[in-house]
Structure formats: C-alpha cells, structure tokens
Length: 241
Image 1 (cartoon, one colour):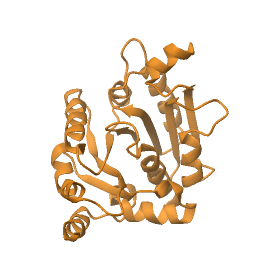
Image 2 (cartoon, rainbow, N blue to C red; image 1 turned 90 degrees about the vertical axis):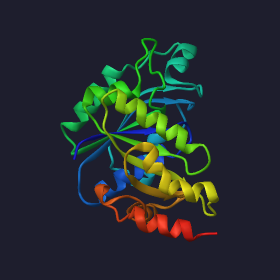
Image 3 (tube, rainbow, N blue to C red; image 1 turned 90 degrees about the horizontal axis):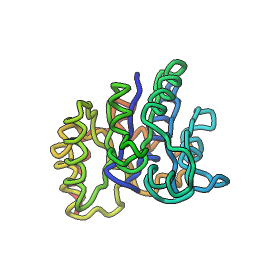
Image 4 (cartoon, rainbow, N blue to C red; image 1 turned 120 degrees about the vertical axis):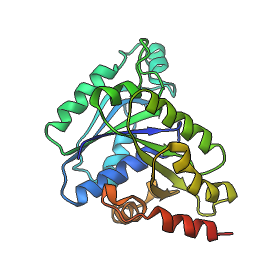
C-alpha cells in the first residue's frame, strides 16, 4: 500500500480508533504496518497516549513512533511554546514516515486535531506532511449535526493544497442515531467530495482485540481489507426511526 495521513475534522472525532482499525486489518492479513504520531498533546510522560491505544487494539507487535509529547492539551505549537520543549516540524514528521515506509508496506500518520493545526511557529501543519509525502488523506468525521461544514472545509483546504482526499470515515457512530446523523451518511461523501470509507461504532475503543478486529472488518471499506458497503449502511440508517 502506501503512507496514509489520518486527519480529523477536529479533536475527539475518533482518529485513534480509526487508525487502530486500519492497522488491525493490515496486521490481520499479514501486511507490515507501522503508525506514526508526530505530536501527542495533553498527556504526561508517564501516561499512556494514543499509540498505546493503537497497540492495545491492533496488536502489541504493531510498531509505533511518537516524535514529541507535550503535557498540555493544546495545539502542538502552543504546547511546545508553553512547555519549552522542542517543536516538531513537518519535515521531521515526513522524514520519519519515509523511514518507517522503508520497512513497512503501510504507514499511518495520525495527526493532532485537524489538518491545519499548527505543529510549529513557522506554521507547519499535517497538510504539509501529507504534501511532502504525496500521501492520501483520510478524513475522520463526526456523525451528527455540524459535521458537514467541518468535513467540507477540511476537504476543500486539502484539495486546494494539492492533496488527494481518499475518503471519509465516521469515527463514532451512535447506538441511537438522530435524524441529522442518519441524513449525514448520505451527505458526508458529498461534503468531502470523496467516498464514505467506513463507519465505526461508538465505544469501540473499549473493545477487546478480537471484537475490535471484527468490528473493524465490518466497519471499514474493502479498500482497507474490510467489508463495509456504504449503500447498504445508508439504507439501514435511513430505515431507523
């Protein structure tokens, strides 16, 4: 496969679960996969971060690499400034991803927040990492009200910067979706200008590894080795009341 950049429309949309799900399917089919997190914020040095969740869910043998960690829940640039720790740059992140790709068929680069969240004082962002690597972008979006605008903005800025938006994934599908969520299943691909590549259920991050793998297979597109059919899912969602 390639290097994929996983970007959310914001914070808390399910990027880490989506990243782990893609990694789990790759690992299950025997494909070498590694995960890079250029900047982890809001987590102390002695606490488990996003990559610990990736290993717990996808497999302890999935190689992961974190370039910087900042304790404050801020953007990487602001967190580096506040802590006094060195910034991470897009060039460093792209170089690290390329190194991992030399030994792994698939490298997943998980961002912090959205596509234009600043990494450093020079204004570098995850979009710059994707551009440097010529890597497709997967947008992770929320299910409910407000997601269409955030998704459209993310996709538009990616396209304007010459990036390829591979598709959009709903990172946390509610057990009882409201009208907005059900409608958004059809509207999100239009907003993104790219296909719906998956829908993962809320709470999946708390699943055991075997259950997580099955839900990943059920909820992700065949592009990732899954079985997700957007038309079938949209039909079931529209039938819910």
